[in-house]
Length: 266
Length: 128
Image 1 (cartoon, one colour):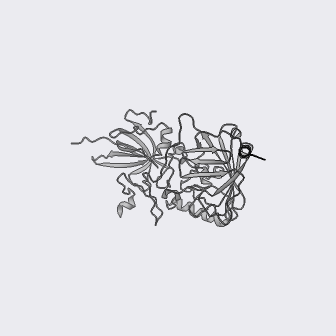
Image 2: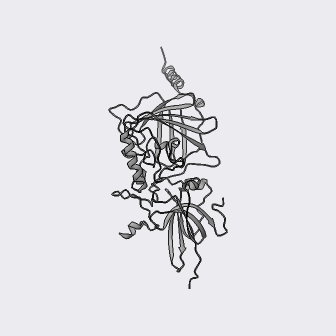
Image 3: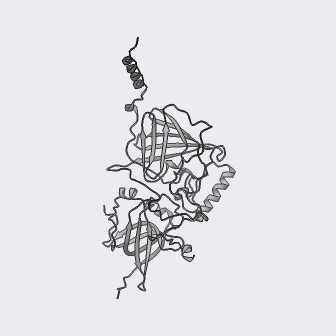
């Protein structure tokens, strides 16, 4: 007959055996920064040196005719300074896949059961569950900025899928005005390359917005020295509020009043 | 009587590609209000330097030929990113004479996006 002590020992041993080995996890420690700018698909950018937010700057996603038209309208709105970046309102995440290409620092925190992608320019956290669980069930999941991510390890590559996105409702892919729909699904392969860079290969499948999968690769460079992630708060001293009616981004002087010419005339 | 300080206000059209490497880490809003194909050079005096999220701001007072003044609001990056590039909250101090290049606001308002700066000795900032 088993004693209580033996039972407790057996439970402890079985739980230890189930623990993934920390020592086998890849070392992705440190602070990383995005390379190549915040235009999402650099390989199809026009002009080739375009920056997200420049008037007329665009990329060429494999859009359906409907979404190509939407994109063109957004590009025109960007050029007219009437395409407010959703995060200008402060306080909302940038959303997936844009979370993989923001400025400031990144941390890729690997644990046996979850990997966290933390961005200094927040509030953004991608939690990738690797403990075998499935995506949220259909009767629970609802559209969110960052979505729901689950994955697994293929060697030292983290492979994860992301669903449950808001799509064009409150997120953009980048400041050229690129968008995807709430039916989009991401497949990301995240790894540290032999050259020391982190690489995220992101494939978006979207039966509404895209005619075929859209694959983009983003890379991140590790910073050296005494680098630490610091607090970031968009609302701390936001001198660029958006007019909720016109979508225009105002610029405030140090006294809190707009310096924009049209605001001066009012 | 105030001595009239010579000023230079130079508007130079430059190609977009030539300003690519010095894109500030502006992050939380559209940048469409700034004309990134143009650079304006301001010679003036630092009024204040806000070392703050989401963006730092440099306030520079420039005198015109008639002795009047105009204050410019120049948007920079977050302290997080700027500190990693050598900037300090003491890099600009009130009263410092500076020459600042910025991408001006499209509507002609007294503001812009920071491009570069040199101090009174002609040294490019930050010195770190």
